Amino acid sequence: MGVHMSAADHGDVADPWLGTGSTAAPSDLQLVDGSRVGVIGGGPAGSLFTVFLLEMAERVGLSLDVTIHEARDFTRPGPAGCNHCGGIISETLVQSLAAEGILLPPTVVQRGIDSYTLHTDRDRVRIETPLQEKRIAAVFRGSGPRGLSEPKWESFDNHLLGLATERGAHLVRKRVEGLDWADDGRTRFRFGKEESEPFDLTVLAVGVNGTALKLLGDLGIEYRLPGTTKTHICEIPMEQESVDEHLGTSMHVFLLNIPRLEFAALIPKGEHVTLCLLGDDIDDALVQRFLACPEVQRCLPDGTGDFKRLCHCSPRLNIRAGLMPFADRVVMIGDCGVTRLYKDGIGAAQRTAKAAAATAVLHGISAEDFRRHMWPVCRAINGDNRLGRMVFRLTGLLQRFGFTRRAIVRMAASEQRRAGSRRRMSLALWDMFTGSAPYREVLLRTLHPLFGLRLMWDMAVCAVPRRRARS
Amino acid sequence: MANGALGREYQDGETIVRQREAGDCMFVIQEGQVEVLGEREGEEVRLAVLDKSDFFGEMALFERDVRSATVRALGPARVLTLDRRTFLRRIQEDPSLAFRILEKMSNRIRELNAEVVRLRSRAQT
Image 1 (cartoon, rainbow over the protein chains, first blue to last red):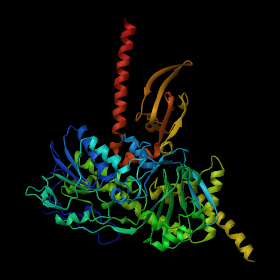
Image 2: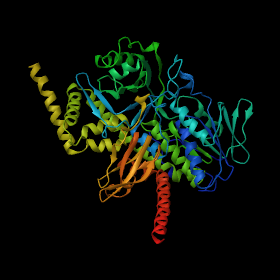
Image 3: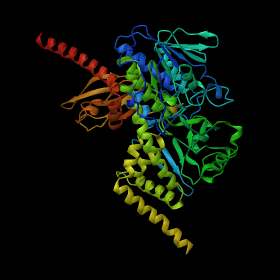
């Protein structure tokens, strides 16, 4: 079909302004009344894309036939119904969804988060949300961990999928096993020996943990798997009262000197606590070492050190976009395309899904259309990820030394005590740990001269007593 | 399941925004109802009752002026705040995020027009 997607030959994806090999000019390919759209993947990216596409099509008086293909049943507890994720919906995403008219009910949100508590090996500080309001949502992507007999909360992914079908999308509970070009340039989906009617637009909204990305090979589309790293997620069961007592409505973040560990958090849910570790190929030894830390054990009931008996997984996380996420009549959104580094992957899925839907309805479905109208959003996420890497390197450096870790807590604690003060450290930590703001803003906050001066002062104060003690 | 409630809880009659106060955010009703009250010469007049998923305070996002009305909870209500800065940043990237607000504001102008016509007709008769 002459569709070609060139993979970048360096860390980040190449700018497609250099050319995608598209055969179609902008807006040569358009969705018209009755056009068929096939979405592969019914996670947040696929469902939100569908909701936005149908809503936008209705605004311009276009009638589309959208089918979501999702074999997974999100109402089933355990791995079969789970998309393997920490389950935090960022402050920014909660607000964006509310502005779109998508509210997250208490039947889906297990706990509203209004603060985070930063732990180091010596101290801890609780940092309140700037408005002291619960604007971060802790959810289960599926219906809950393995062994759960009666789920009390609805799956987040299932909730969004329900919104998509309520708006008129069809749901096909089959795994797409292959893709073929039809003679007229559209695509057909294969399910074993069966084949679908051709689709005018194919949307890949799959993660990086399955094999669905390889479907692109069927279309002769060159691709490279995104760069990934292994994470660790574990669901720790606890009584609701115990979660209230030990963790409350705060996300607990740990700044510890453990090599290869970039980020560690305990996220309170309804009757579980989600352990979420990010870093450089997290393995069992690193998990055990983290769980053995006294500051972690203080947040958990006795006997939770043996994580292997609990529902846990080690999903891969997209940390580097692997390809330009579009071709004529094909677009990739969510984790398989471009996503945010470490944080707010669902927020990035919402942004790319919206950009793809708006492009398809308002402009066209050629690679050129996606390059002109969707790529700027992907490029902004990629550019911000570069700054994110710098921020995480800087944090990793500060994590190494006891006096720097104490200085961070000291500075944040002093800001929390003084009402009305400029909370530069608190806000930088908040934005970084919750994924609420672009990494660019986090970096700019830390580059403020007053931030540097105050941090140096706190580092000096935290370093002095140790020298005295040694002498 | 109360732990999963997002936003902030307001009791019946509690003021969420006050007329003539400065504002830099808008609000989306998550649960319950609120009443919008206009104040003139010390008297309050109910302008509207808003329900779940309605929003208010949106004028503060687009103009730097004081609140044009007071909003109070009508029964227990839960309301989510949307920051001006976060929202404008998202609108810059995705202008269609403002469609729903424009649609609602357009509806409100239509209702106000109808109300002006009704009041003027009454004054003329």
